[in-house]
Length: 234
Image 1 (tube, rainbow, N blue to C red):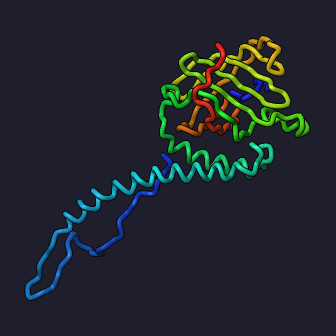
Image 2: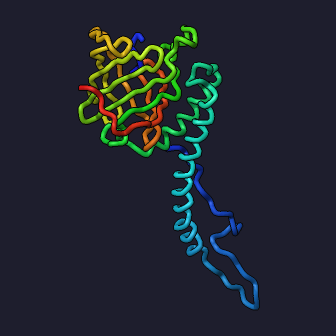
Image 3: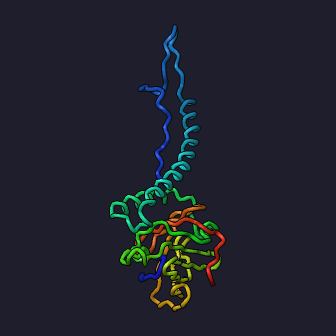
């Protein structure tokens, strides 16, 4: 779902303890007056037991660091308007790692999705309005979603203040079909949306502060939560 008119397992490396012994057999021989053979079975068991905890901690750390890498990569790109093809590819690679670490497997069943989000990056040129002079582009774009009413709203800021509202139909626990109903020109003049004003949106990453979505036209959207209490007009 575009944010304006429709014409608009992070893979973690398994943690291995240092190899403390090297032997061609399953035991180590200590030479004294009489050879003594000691089984390594308890050591192997110990390795298995403790290896779980570093993996668990690394997953949490990796998700946080990947998210920071994404925010750092996005920061100088004016929400994507200044992104080169190479920049877009780099960000997509980071996003895919983040998506693999998604802590919310069924976002449409989570209260975290509800509220007003600010768009901080997209590949959609129509939303970025890159064909317009900079002074005529929306400075900030927002998207709001309320799962309980299955409503969504996209909003532009100064100087346009355009809005559009939509009905959502769940396709699965991550994806919704989108049917736009009304545009508001300058935020004031209502215009009924044509029947062809439809799309879809899949939420591929969601936590308390960041949401990643992918639209039906292949565009990527990265948004930050700004108001979890916001309600979309019914």
